[in-house]
Length: 152
Image (cartoon, rainbow, N blue to C red; front, side, top):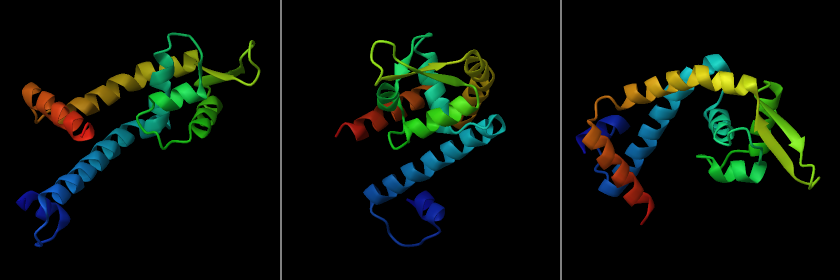
């Protein structure tokens, strides 16, 4: 509890549940800021990076906007706007489905795949750096606790 009081610059007693939630938010923002710092030179947001990884996982097959949205880590994102920005950068293409003209299909381009080849190792190194003070067992325990927290 001393650590959370120090983090908040407060001497007030904070209920453990509140302190835990505040700590999760602070940690999430710290992780996000560190990864954003690595993506900035590539003019990518975390959400755009996530979309590119989803599209790469399609292995050359197109996917529609709704399916991209369902697979995204951040469900709050405006998928259409994200895809539009990736199209302008040449990382993805948008096509009208030949069998259903109301359906829009998105596919990653060679340029998008090349960008991921360059960015992936940098993000992975950052993830490793952010978690390097935890053992493998502690990381497994952290993941189990976070899953338990979400599955109440």
